[in-house]
Length: 338
Image (cartoon, rainbow, N blue to C red; front, side, top):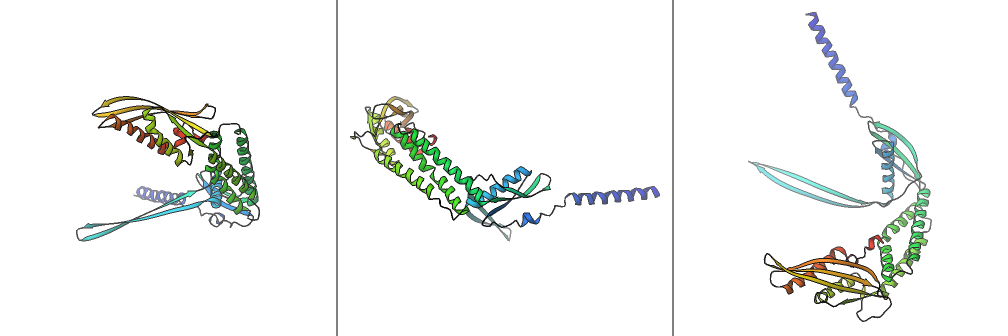
């Protein structure tokens, strides 16, 4: 009897210890005040908190939050749906909401910062508090912008003796990448409102003026000797004009490029369809006759009525290709890489 009582008491004691250990193991640590209520940004300093599986990832998270605080733009969409179901005499209503937030954060390099606080909150959970000086962030962004414009000037100088289309594509690309540079200038204004950024604005306006001037000079002549090529002629002209490129069939300007279109087609039938398999060679030639761009397209037109309609369908396929890839890709120019 005594042994039985002893065993029961021992089991109760072990159970109590186990319960206390479990409760202790799962009790979350209170977050420090510097994390819950971090310092507010002021005219000199920016602050941010972050967390991660280790110190480095927590620092990276805090730097991302700091950068987002400077340049993030939020686009929110909210949708609420309600459904009603009936079970016997009872009705049940269910509501579902869906909120989507899109954030566009420009890349900002913050290389000078201080880790004011750091703590291992729990296993694989580290938290930090960072501080960075506005002036030093602004200095880094300003130096990066100067480097970017210096690279653009070097590229521009290297292209002075290149063909007109190469120079046009360079200036066109500067206009496509312009929003990113202007965003960096806006961040500079946020960091240091008292300092001028007009120098960078002048650079952008000068690039834009040169792009517009070259766009007005550039023109294209379309040349072809095949019946199918004549059907493709208006499609190519429309693609050029949509890209704001001028076409002038009679022009003898030095900056006018020739778009040479050669076609070869095979006719076939399959499953009751007339097929026109076309190889389309598009060459861009400069004033000296040199080929500056080239591409061969393989398109198949089809019709259930006759070959003539199948040929017309080739023109439709070319138009869709231009709409999908862009006229420069169809001409054999990948301007995004230039």
